[in-house]
Image 1: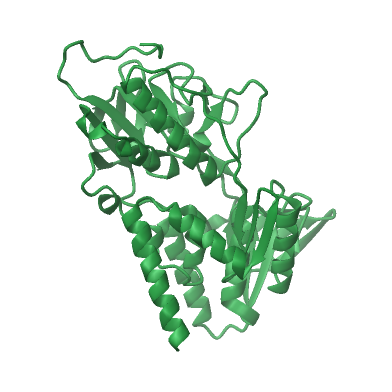
Image 2 (image 1 turned 135 degrees about the vertical axis):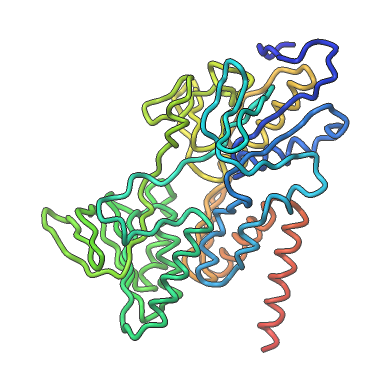
Length: 405
């Protein structure tokens, strides 16, 4: 075997090879599905266990469509038991507390220690530290977050308040997409302010996408405050620092999209980390200290020779899942794992209801056509064919109904 790994399964043993996958997002769930799809896998004596504290995946790229009722929650948050039905993949709803790499065990909050032969860590990151006075601050990463935002918006919409003032902190893709959707939903009744510490929004995106986003937000009357930091947040106002001056802005609530951090238990694992707490991996996605462990997504730093950094996007995790599954399948068949090569396919961002910007291989689209392309691409990437087909059928049914009205 040329993988440099030591199996803890005795030769001649009939014990199943235990593959444990932590995290049910793009990295973890898709690794399980890809691995399961290989011809001959069902005949392998393997046991895949997927572990996540929630009972559903969050399809983050389309999360914003829930705000404007363009998509329904069941389309974005499909349950694992539905997605894994009739598949040789066990789902365990539990919270990871620690990993004992030397004894190959995962410590779970409720179900104790779980043994593994191969491990995939794809638990993602969590929100960065929120500022003092965060009682009036909402985040937007989970099903619970979307429900809280919906309740807040409905409460304000049902009130007698003439103007609904929303401050969104962070001018990255999440902040821009939220600003467009909320502005479109509230219309003239909304006063949406997007706050960014840097000199421009969407700093990691192409200039074409930035221009299309700026144009769309201007059309929706979104106020953009650049080179602006947040000094304080109170129940009904936010204090900003801009051009060496302090400004107090009335707000009904604040949406915080600025910054993420690695989970504390990941930072405390007994292996090599970078200064941010991410786990250091070989180009094959294997942990440098333990080759039987693969790390994907935002918690991984891959040791590329030219010190290249990968963007923290679903597109990266999606491609890493495919490579991790290939490498695991190769190891199970006594083949050497291969390095991960990221192919940047472009960028897509929603810019309000039925509007988006798409930039891919030199082609730039915006408006309703970009929105249609974006939706089509993401529906195709939904976790299973059956779920994708159900979403597509539901979208077509709604579209036909609206056309008849």
